Image 1 (cartoon, rainbow, N blue to C red):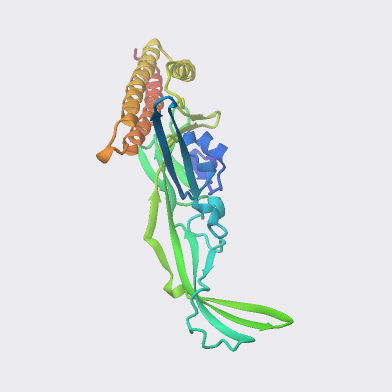
Image 2: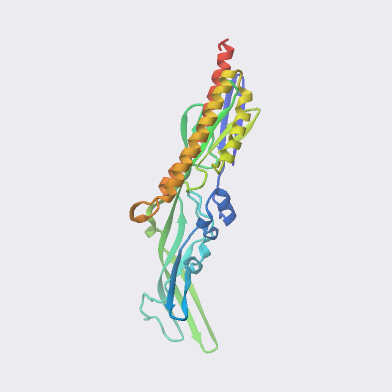
Length: 353
C-alpha cells in the first residue's frame, strides 16, 4: 500500500509518494490471487522440498486379457524440518530484520570429547551444533515517473519519493514494480555443552548451547535475488491528482472479451478528457493498437510456454518476458493517452486545430 500527497503553498506545488510494504506468510489463495497457476502452489509453502516417483506394470496374456497397475510414491521433506521451517510455512524476513526464530540442530550422536567425561551416574558431553536463519539484504522496486521520465529505486518501506506534476491537470502518473527480493541462509556454528545425571530414582540433563557468530556464513554468499514470478503482475500503473485517483491495470486474461472490456474502460477514461475530435481519434488509435499488440504478444507467450529449451526443458524466462511486455503495453497506452490529451488541450488553448 502507500500514501500519495499533493500540496500547494504560495504557488509551489509538491507531490510525494510514500510506499509501504512488508513480507507475509502467504496462503494458497493469496498465491492464486497473485496469478500463480495451481500447479505451482505447493499448498502455499514458502519453502518447497518434495520428491515423487511413479512405478507400474502391464500385462497381456492369452484368455486373461490385458491390464496393469501403477502407483505414485511421494515424500514432502519439509514436514521433517525443525521449527520455524516445519511444513515450509513461515514469514520470510524483511531486509535487515533480526531476532527471527532460527532452526537449531544439535548433533548429539557425536561427542567431541569422546565420552571421557562420562562417569556413569553423571557426566558431561560436548556436541557440535548449528543454527540456521533466513536473512535478507534487499526488497526493492522500480518506480518510473511518467511525468518526469525518471526512474527511482525504492529500497525501503516508508521511503518518501518526490513525483512530477503535470501542469495541465495537476496529476502524477507513475509505475511501480519489477520487484527484487534477496534471500539467503545465515548459518552459525556452535557447541552444546550437556551435563547429565542418571541414578536409579531420578535422571535429567541440562544443555548450554554456545553460538559463534564470528564464524557465521551466508549460503549462498550474498544470498539469491528473486525477481517477478511468471504469471504475476510485475508492474502496476497509477495516476493520482488532487481531484481523482485510480490504479491502471490491464486485464489478467488477454481473451477477446477481456480486451474488449479493457478497451471500453480505456475509452471511458480518456475520451471525455479530449477537447476536440482529433484527440478522440488519436485515443481510439492507441486503444486499437494496444489491443492488437497484446493479442500478438499473447500468442507469442502461448507459443513460448509450449516450446522447450536445452535438453527439452521448458524455458520460463521466455514466458516471463512476454508477461512483462504485455503489462508494459498497457502502461504505454496510458502514458500515450495522457500525453495526447495534454497536447490537445495545449493546442486548443493556443487556438490550433
